[in-house]
Length: 119
Image 1 (tube, rainbow, N blue to C red):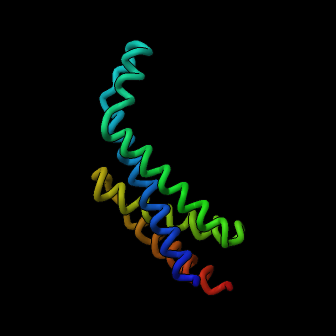
Image 2: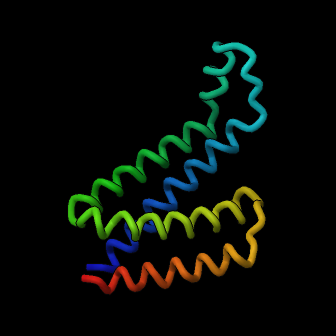
């Protein structure tokens, strides 16, 4: 059962972070000269897909919370979200990752494993 929750947390994190990355890519270059243009620019493909992915991620959050204690889910989800954020930022947004970040990922993964054995 624990592996299912960890898998759901990874899916939820991937959906949310990829959705946020899509929105970030979609809003790059906005000029925001008028409210009308700003609203029109918000309806581009990348932003709409990002919003949909975040919405699906929210559904996974609801599924997880329906069966798990918040005190178990939230730390696990936060750790996994941080890991997924670094990976997506590196591959999708071409951001650099330092050795300290990689070491932090290792510590977070260790903490997630310890947390999964809690039950």
